[in-house]
Length: 330
Image (cartoon, rainbow, N blue to C red; front, side, top):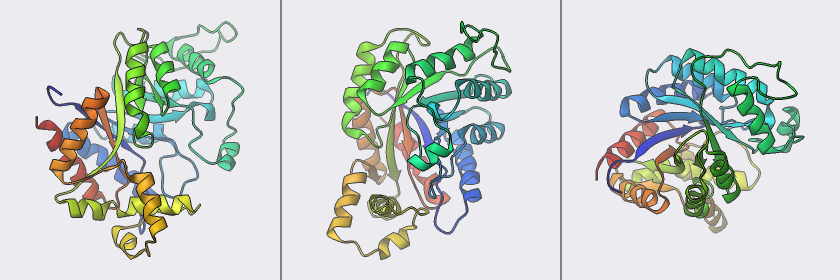
C-alpha cells in the first residue's frame, strides 16, 4: 500500500443481551453519526429477517434515519436481498432515498435470503426469475421505462441521479457477475475469507465498463480493536459464543463478554468458535493496523468495510476510532 485506504462500516444493528431491539436500531444510527465524524466513507446495514440477534430487517428505513441525521457519509444497504422483493419496489424505495439525499445513497444488492426457510416463505421469496434477470429489471426501473413488457410502468420519484448498485457476493460467480455488469463489487470477506484474494482478482481481471468505467472493489472484514490485545479478546467473547450457539441451533441476543466468560467452554466449543471466527481480526491498534494493511495489500481492495458484533456502544465506537487511526498511519 502506498497510502491510506478508504474505510467504511457494515452494521447489523446487533441486539445485545440486556438491551432491546429498539436500542439496537437507535445505536446503529448513533454509530453512523460517529463514523461520519471519524471520516468513514459509507455506512451500510444488511437485510436479515427473524433473527433475535439482528434488528436490521429494513435497511432502507435505517438508511433514511441515518441520512437524515448525518450530512456527508454515504448510506444504504449491504444489502437488499433482491429475490425477497419485486425489483419495482426496490427501485421505488431507493429512488425515494436518493430524492431525499441526492448523491449519498448506495444500493447494495445480494441474492441470499437473509433468513431461514420459514422466514423466506413468509416473505413470499421468489426465484421465478434468475438473479441476473432480476438485476436487469431493477436496472430498467432505476434508469427509466425501458422494459418491453412494462414500458408503461415507471419507478418514481425520479431525480437528477440514481443510487449506484453495488453487487454483493461471497463467491467467484458473484465476482464474475459484477465484473460483467460493470458494477461495484462488495465481497463478504468476513464469512468467506479464503476466497477474498481470488474473488478480488477475478473481478478486476474480468471487469468490463458498465455502470462504472473502472472497477471498485470493497472488502468486508470482521475486525475488533481495543486498547490492548487482552481487552479486544474479551470484547470478542460474545461473538465467539454466538458462533457456538448458532452451530447448536440456538438463537439469542449477543452475549456480553461477562456472559461469554462464564460459559463452560469445552474443547469442542473452542474448536467451533475458532473455526467460525478465526479469520476475524482482533487485537490492539498495532495488530489491527498490520493485519488490515496486509489484507488490503493481498486483495488489492479499494476499500475495507469493517463489521463486528460488539456488546456495548462504547466499545464499538472505540473500536472504530482505533481502526481509523491505525489505517491513517503508513
